[in-house]
Image: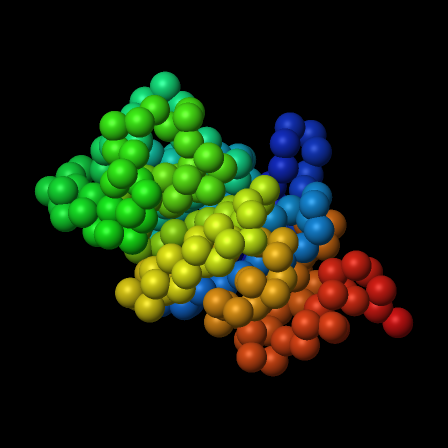
Length: 233
């Protein structure tokens, strides 16, 4: 299990997260929603060791203090917002980079075939430069690269951003498959309808704080939108 206790983090002198305490149960999908600037991406970056923080981040009961390259060895992997693929490398070279952690190198070929099975378009474009892919294909590549690291916990930041509705459906279909396979997922997403459709737990953030935490089955979409847009009575 991944959890935070009284987590504070931000950028330089600007604090963004304020005493955030959350848990992300093993084998479940936790969705974090909120408007731009709510602190969602900052939370994921802090979890990955990309930002300094106060408070605690714990994985399987052990406090994390390492940097990103150490965390991937422990199975904590992030698919960043905006895809961020290596544009001057081929699709397959991008995927190979995802298998850099020592613990997953032996399974790299098996993982790659699995990814090509989930994303047939990536297999078709395996020798193509990543910079020539469409937005949807680049998102698939970013997710595939993360999966090459054999993640125990996968952090996915805004996978639907800028994608056509049909591609969003395809991407969320893959997320459902990963969840069914037992991967623990932390999903940051502004498409609340899609997010609730795959989630076990939902946390709503505003101004760097968690203002609502509920099982997804107990979340009313209209109430969520009222809180999302700060229309509470």
